[in-house]
Image 1 (cartoon, rainbow, N blue to C red):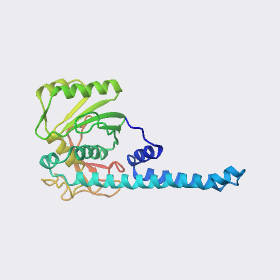
Image 2: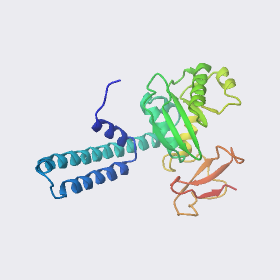
Image 3: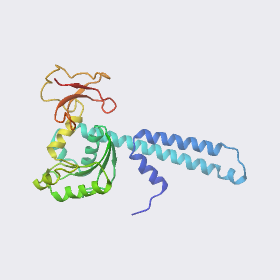
Image 4: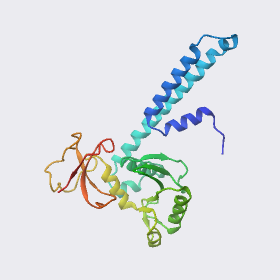
Length: 264
């Protein structure tokens, strides 16, 4: 593995974090630079090095701002990629990198903090680490269109989940899973998401304008408003718990707002 510099490490770390983290880090570097270079010089060496210190900390601040801009652009692209999906066919037309970003954005809208590991690529590996809802989830993405994912990939993910001590693993594909793969995951902390299931997941987290409902809501003549913040709501399906499989209205500003309404 090629060695990286401090600047490259800082940039790579910040670009993977929310944009505001990069802005805050830039402010810290800038303030530290002022403090360090603004103190009275105690000796000639300090005086000579003062311009170098200012250049160093100002440079770090600029790197942090650039990383923040890259993070903001990446976040915008990921949101647009998800909102433009119309179903299984459009998802299968994505590149493997776009597919991974789509999956990450879908889970992010479910309230998870998403870490892109960068270790998967087109060939495999754990691509995303999800943290939230009291659990750590390892996600492996397979952009294989019509190809079936076999049991060996499910075993591989299960081994990583066990060795890393994660709560569960999720294997996502735009294709299908073999019967052996479906059978192996029974009784294990694994979730298999095939193409149609992923299309439904994406539809569930899209805003109403991007994912219009095919039938009018059974209770409301128009899209209801959130009882907490007044924003429009979208019809969702509970994924876990005693109400798994039941429909409900959720706020489009989730996870910042967790307002809900019953359908019936």
